[in-house]
Length: 338
Ligand SMILES: O=P(O)(O)OC[C@H]1O[C@](O)(COP(=O)(O)O)[C@@H](O)[C@@H]1O
Ligand SMILES: [Mg+2]
Ligand SMILES: [Mg+2]
Image (cartoon, rainbow, N blue to C red; front, side, top):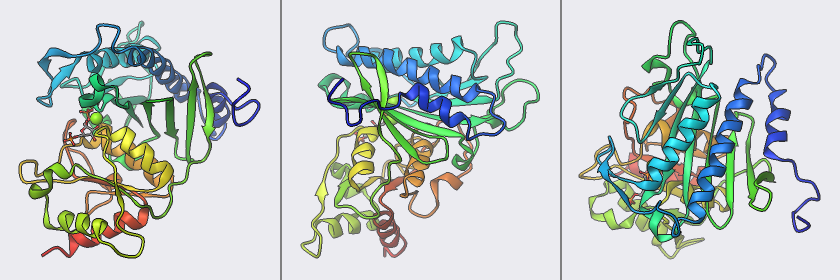
């Protein structure tokens, strides 16, 4: 491992334990939860890396609650993360893009005293699975609203600003886990030869402004006026424009690039999807927390994503996130659109 940036970068495991000290009354429960996510990420990574060789590509032949055709890797990733969290009894409830309702985690002695719930998008960028393009996993963690009785829907339907931790794994040319517990954003790269995540991107800060915009322009004619105006603004010959259009079609991969280089990701509402496509609880809230923790901004065009109080597990929202000045420009165009 002689070619790493620093001689002995910290491992993710060491970092999790070290950061535990930031929380005065910590019981180590959150650390064990994050370690379960780390374990499941490695298992999924192994399958993603050999996707063409194992029976993990293609559709399952059924549809999930979103009405989307479930891919085999969606199901494998979902089962892997749920098993890792279940087996260690580090959560009392799990909600997933692939499950209609939340799952109650029953402890062996039937008394699940865990105070955390997790929401996951087990495989993000499903349309890219079979074509060897970056995909990811997104997770969001909350403390229960009350420890009375067993887990309730309210424990999941909390505004994003209540998250105690959030992050994603991007399975790409290298596999990275990027997360926050509310004290900045840190990125860890997996050394596949050792199966260990090492701190490779400490304290990530997104540039205040950028030159990359990520939006599916194939829907252009269906976009609201403000969004159309912003796309034209990005394409104008002026000052530091035109910007560069980059759209991978995996939220995690598009966001990861923009986080490191500066840029904006937009999935707006459009004529046949008035609430947009992305899911508030396990896609937009965790990415919004990471964005703000890295110095960026995330909104639905009018409101801060993290202030939205959800009413349904799988509710969708228009989503704009990235470099602060770019998001403010889009909001300006949306609010002033005629
Ligand atoms: O193909 P479209 O409509 O541009 O949508 C792409 C977006 O949908 C998603 O694939 C939705 O996520 P899932 O793959 O988890 O369903 C995002 O990752 C991506 O940004
Ligand atoms: Mg997704
Ligand atoms: Mg998904």
